[in-house]
Image (cartoon, one colour):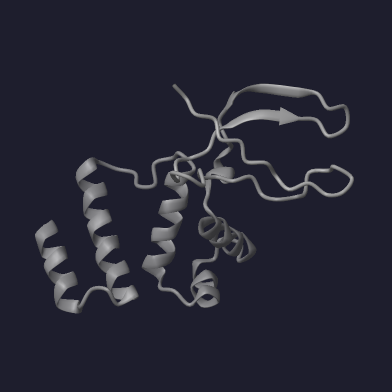
Length: 145
């Protein structure tokens, strides 16, 4: 049995729906939300069903902010690095996360190549964030070979 928990969007005095971004994740369990109803603000026509959200609407707030910076920098990774004060591997990692969130495969190639790239990216991200020491990152990379 499904439990429906309606969460109403705040409305202005005129009854117009305020311009809030659609929630991407469930506020209760953090699962990805699904669009089930669309309403025309002009004639009040309502269409109900199960609709998959477009790729960009699947991004969380942090990913969307990164995508906006990336687009504003016209895809120039060096400019993104400079603006966000993050390293090249971190930029690539965040791009991969966005690509995956949109439902695409971020890493092309064989599974072995993908796993190797994932370990390398994790090691570089850990170094960049300060969560891994140089020795720990080296051990992580050696275990990958």
